[in-house]
Length: 378
Image: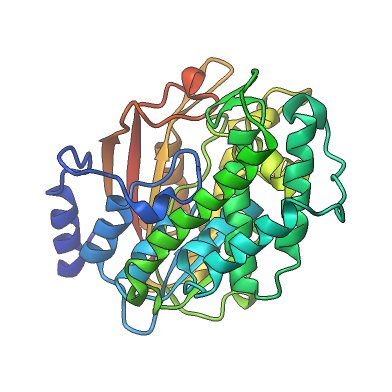
């Protein structure tokens, strides 16, 4: 395999970096406005963008954008970006994180709470096992608050209020925590719904007001199944892709956000059916196998081959999986598929995942390392 001097230089720079980021604090207030499992640490996309560079007149794409870390890093560096995700909660988080902050947001939040505390004009949505996961008085408080949020006309304000609402769902439910899916008794009352909601809004206000200039670069967020994306869905030239595809049988994003989706009127079962890697796909009759994942990733890489400009780069962060006791080296699968799709593998880097990265099923996934795979669209 022959690389030109530019690619050799990029490879040498990437090889010299401590990708464990051992001495760097990963906290980022903007990334803390809503819980999300297995997030990128911002140092990964930030470093890739700075070292690889983005050709003039092109954008950065994250086709599995999740909570939007790649998008916020691109935006902070003044580069246009596009994010795609199947999960409506992920898209909501990404939009709110990258949109300009509406000046009347906090005032709108307080008005919604004031009206919700005395409102009787609301309907509790039909949600499976609602009484198991939410006390009756909590259901009424959430339903009344959601009714008032939906009455807000300004789209930017309404979406930020919905995000604050979504962020407190697990805390006011009977679910033990964001990373443990078990029902327990909590000392939560209806007034806590309103207090926690206002606290979440104040946090969003604080974070979004700190650096208003960072929101100048345009960001587009598409709620779609990336495997169905075509060139017509993107009105921009893509020079760099930075993403982390879902691992088979590792993280279940639909389950993590299931009740958030139901409360906000989305369909988590539809998300579950189309979510790549969801554990449910591997533990049912006629379950999926590693070959299904290979086929999905071949479609994905073929799409990236068409969408990314000539001599652009595709950076993929992925861990390995365990499917029915079998260890699956997902990075090697992607490496083979990339070569099949006529892409060059520039570098393959292994980094350690801190033990505090948690999700519902990290205990059986036992994911301790992940690989950064940098591909060249020659």
